[in-house]
Image (cartoon, rainbow, N blue to C red; front, side, top):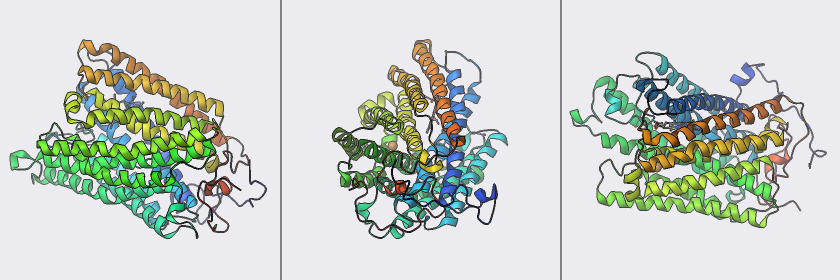
Length: 537
Ligand code: HEM
Ligand SMILES: [Cu+2]
């Protein structure tokens, strides 16, 4: 531990008493750290709700034939599971929680540029979630379209599509405003001396993410409003019976939703970069390459949406162009993996729990990325399109990638956020069980997909029985692992505080202030002279 003697202690943001006390002190707080915790808790809640739905789906799929629900219930489950996981957990993702908490600290600022707007964004987030929830329990029940709301089915089903779409629309505003807030903060509030190329790489990742949030989200917003118009007023933008075009819907949807994958994964990569550097005790290898690859991913990510539509009816030319562009986006991702490996290769590794989480991330993210290339090339995609292969691939990317990085970040920054340390042994055991469960759950789905089992089906032919059975067992193992991980953290939060300002020997700014941070983060705004990862003299 370093620096404890030099840090002058102030009341932390957890203890600080402003105008409002108790619960109002949280619900009306404009402190970026308290807002970050509001996001963290609500996202974790939605994640757990989604996990429960996933486990119920896997129970239904444990054997051929009907097990415990009707087909219509299954359709509602995979739709609400998808909506919850995508819109309420992984799109706000690391940006809303850890981004909110650490972005200002990492650039040496006291808060984000627009603190009130920041709080408002959280209310929009909760508002959107409530509208989706309302849609589940009113009218004709939860939607059964899948989270993609593909037309023309989404125009015709008599389930509650309008409310879910409206909810997603409101969530979009939350995302846009957060992105805007972060961009302005990064441009205007960096501490003196912190040039762009002295920013920690997590900030670079957040910067790329924010631009996607700001520029891509409006596209889906408008698309969702068009769906509402179609349903409520019968306009017919996407309805072939009225001269509309369902393929147009797919274009508009994926023009947002592919870049949205990078809203999920870029902050995750940023956090992994911080973790790998810290636990390698070394200056990160290829700082500029990592920084610029974030921007490259954000940019090329806009150009590849068509790979979701290879089988929907596109010209030959657009198919190969989209295929080629999809391969291009793999390059900046590979640059990051290469640079992480190079950083570790020359470093002296400190094998702490956050490091193991980062390793788990790298392992599954590589499988996710490589199988993405299978989907990105037209010839192989035609074979596995809309099969369980796709379900396996995106769980490896969004859950194995962004989701595991979420937990990696949580273990990395936990002592800073709460000034307490969790049990490291239990953290490692929890991770191991999560890792085993995760692969047991999702790997068989690759095989099922190649064998030809379609996705979004509640029943299947007997020849698919064995991998499905293994997969369901995996969901239980994963569930147990997650419980261990969360209970361990929850218990640590209740434990007595320790003076752990810098438990990992981190070199970025957050490790130079007290844990938990004081209301204004810094007593005095620091002046930046060294690079973000330079080893202390
Ligand atoms: C224990 C955890 C989880 C389990 C057991 C699980 C299981 C499942 C299952 C069985 C399906 C339906 C497959 C089908 O019939 O096509 C599914 C779909 C899906 N899952 Fe998960 N999942 C879990 C976690 C996650 C996470 C963390 C995310 C995102 C961050 C996620 C995102 C999705 C999405 C987007 C769909 C597609 C829904 C659709 O087709 O509309 N899942 N999941
Ligand atoms: Cu895509």
